[in-house]
Image (cartoon, rainbow, N blue to C red):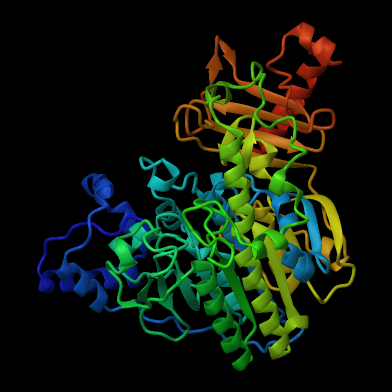
Length: 591
């Protein structure tokens, strides 16, 4: 983790600046702060490895936080105002949710598992922005993570793009709150929140009552910005560990740099700590007879895919306890003997340039270690969900609480030789989504309809009976009718749009449309998606017949006429399909 920059100022000067910054928070917000940021200040991002001076630390700790917002009119927690818990995991491949036995017991057996849930922009910050706002990335303007972790440090930090485009006022939490709900965000917010805190110490976005959020998500040696409902200011608390995860966080040793308080334990594993904060919010809301919207977003199974010692005794090794291995003994993905044909695809002659550039030296062992560590790391998330459901039962509100388990984006485990996300292939864009609403019967089923993360916010509004009306037309479409049995207008296709880093062997900027049969993708040289990528004079595009080729092995636009004929296609038919798909894509991707 990168913390703060070196400041050489007196305590008096810092205190004065912070008072001005806090005043600006009340009047402007971070979007205008970002607009005023100079190019030289942006250039200081590379200095983040340096710690703050002692005087700057003391001033940051003493700085007054934002004034607490007045709460909305309180609504009683009853059948008309069911509670909502969203569990949002990070980088989980859709199929991997099947390897979570407690999840299946707690949610899947009672809820609806969506087999075709997609993240149109399969990258953390754009995806989470879409979930919160009901807007595509091209609508909310968050196209990148914009941090060193994502290897795109030249891009605008994600949270700054979110703020400057007025998305803080569009979040679904605002409409929950206006409907009388207590709102809480626990875990990961948006990439580069730590950089926003450097500009506005203690900053907490509007419309969230309870805020326990990573400046930068870590498994061990992490910080949380904490502001419970009613508190006048946020406190930054560090959670160092003396156990097996000591020193594994990216921040300074012990994570104390810039923190107001420290809570050291033998093992402070972040998922477990976040769970305790979630239990506190649930209990407080129930005691106050408030309905709540709880957004619980742990780091798992994002890299480095580390688990607590009950599952991984040595955080630096790849060995797991019997308890962990027993939990996933029914998981075929652990050994993954039935790997798809796309795994380490050898003939990529029909694929775009970036796939051909992916290293052929990747070993199966590397992908095996990554996959297994991901599968184990979410067991602590299951434990957290189990504790939350137990708490709901103790409080007598379990039958009035909707639970959503979702992922921000998928992850390729060597499919087409690639490791990662932000790609157009199904391994990247498909995400887990399970919804349990105890008010409606018919759970424990699989739903094949196409849904996207942009659909979640309007679906929440419909299920709970309140209005979700941001200042621009929603891209999301409610599928509440698939849950309450009233029927819904189903999608025939979904949009795919990714903005690349421009680096070799990484996906470029793309846009595509994915239906039940066809997937069509265009590649671009520019962020505006006006200049098509070319290879040997030809425009780079992809077309897959998903009915015949579910693993996306044969790009029909990369085959020669003879090869097309051998696979049962003719050029005229393919041209007609492309014309139809281009028209659909043009209508969906916006200007």
